[in-house]
Image 1: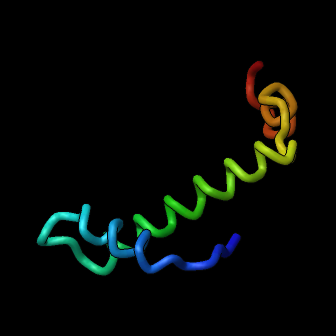
Image 2: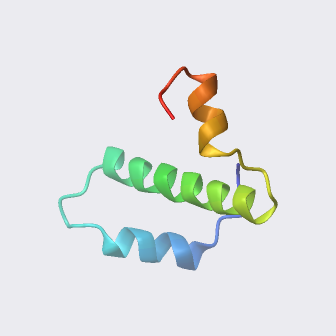
Length: 62
């Protein structure tokens, strides 16, 4: 899920990172943020599955 980049948000994300952060660290932060925002959006719109349903699908104990 892509969202519009807000420069202010991007700057804050970078400013919170340690001085020795790498490009990989930045990409990980962006990925995690995007995944969380996507999950929250799915939750708000009801695009979720019950845990029991997922466990059954993957053969995990309930």
